[in-house]
Length: 81
Image (cartoon, rainbow, N blue to C red; front, side, top):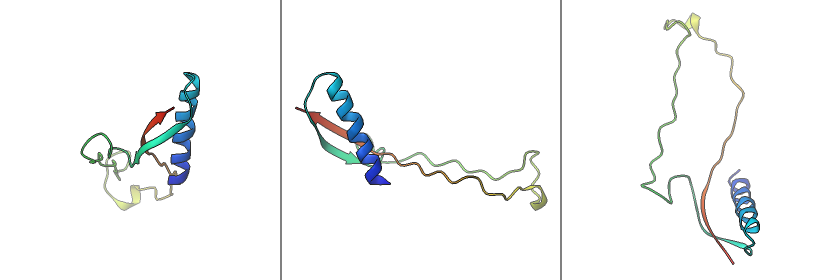
């Protein structure tokens, strides 16, 4: 998944470079989100398990799993010829 995210970033960077008639792009830095510009801390992922009416009994919970979605991001800096 990470390779696909990097490949996607390179494709997008090259499209931008092509749009302004620049040459081939070269990746200068690639990192997890937040690692290039900042202290590397990521905001916590929100998670809550409550029923619609606020009740906390187990009978009120729907334990049917949601669809699994995988999302991968990278931050990257590029240079163009």
